Image 1 (cartoon, rainbow, N blue to C red):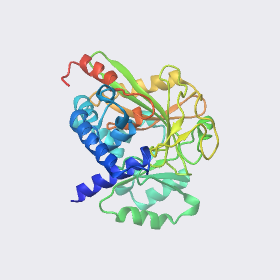
Image 2: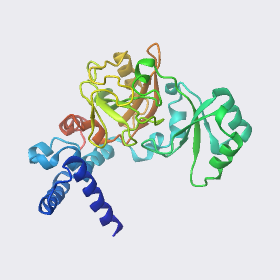
Image 3: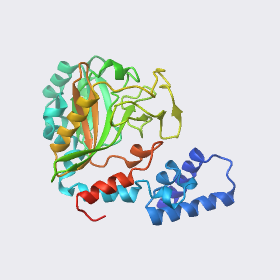
Image 4: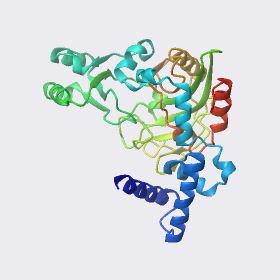
Length: 333
């Protein structure tokens, strides 16, 4: 029953966001039946159905998009299950990609209070993350000058079902900080890696911007996304959020989104290619990259389950692009 309630609520919420409130009961039933058809044929989730405008598209148009079922297929083909934890577990990721991070981190659960306190004293402002969290959930920033260190340590250690790490704060380039200075505004680049031919394919690129003074820029946590042209590094779309709202300029800072060119774009792509080659058994990854002053790039994290919707919303369907490369990898779809 809980599952049915969730589906009804989710469908109702998405219908309101994308179609509107003035929908008669008859049309609601038609939309619902049409979604069931899209779910069975294309494997579309409710978010896929509304986000990609399936309610306005015919079968051919729907076949252009990566749906949830196709996303699972990509992940299962490309990523070894036993190695996905290298991306999912933040502590393991930080150790495996140490040379790409450019910042210090510490395992809270396996450290003493003196080590914990010393980390704060040296770095002053620190991010606290749960090692298995996703979409920015549970990420918080603390300042040494404004907290009770002993109480924070006790609170983190007392959560028996959680495992926390500390990370040194990143100081991003001013040109990207101008979008939303309260968060690190990252570049999300999704790659497929052919580890036989040693070719890194760039599947999509998007700039992620925080909003509402949140400390994270995640799209599903009030963030704003915008498409980046892979060849030029220029943002070629307006900004958008998960509620289907559009922005020519950032709603808080007013910085123009469309037309912005990410500096050192070629160097960014070279950095990502190096990261992709570093984990050859996890070949589908969404890389979150931050630009520092002077053209240096750091890796925030790599996502073996990079959201398919974030890549395609308000852009175009990418299923044919993926399918072509997966065939080149000589794997059955």
